[in-house]
Amino acid sequence: MFHNNFPTRSANVVPRAIYESDFIQDRWGFAGGLTSCPDGALGVDADVDLVAMDRRIGRNMLLNYGRVIRLLTSIDECFAIADDTRWLPYQHAGGLTSCTLYDGAIDHLDLDVANSHPVHNAAVKALIINSAWKIGADLGWANQQIISATPEVGKDVRRVNGELLALGGGQAHVAESLSHAFDMAVQLTGTDKAIAFDGSACPQPARDAS
Image 1: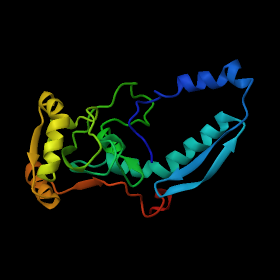
Image 2: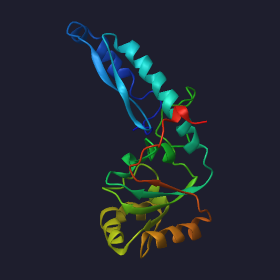
Image 3: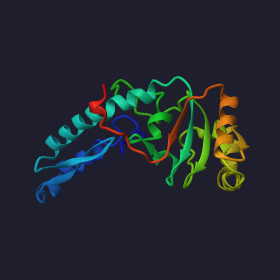
Image 4: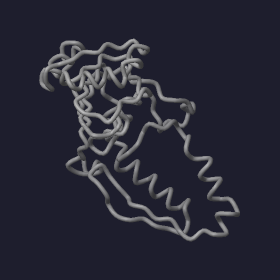
């Protein structure tokens, strides 16, 4: 899964400095890892040169995930559905975590963008919660319309996140079922565009998309 919730270049300096230190270079053997696409693992990449391997992995990420990232960031209005067993920022669909949608207001591939925490994507009008380990306060959900898919979910949302929701100025709603929650979201947001983060992968690699 591609994680797009980290600010531009935020993870580069310290790891590179550690790798290039004498302590590591005197003990360095090689690096290895899986190559991936939204459809799953493609193979294995390994090299004694970590920088060369990093460039190949970077190219692979842009090739296989770039189009799907652009697809999510081009959405003008929608509501999200949390229906996975993970923390909301790590719930994924099509090989991309929900951060890609929620942080879509900033282009992390633009090197002129300042290294700051992403701004909530105003295109996401509401969030339906059907299943989630926890929600997290860093995606800007707390100022949204939050719709619990069932009364049982609503109790947990208020118990775990009620204070954050109140501070963020969001509004909590409770539906009788997931289908009812969907209808409520359409009525509240004025759009029927929904993106469900349910742990699914793309049916085929993004590089093969026409």
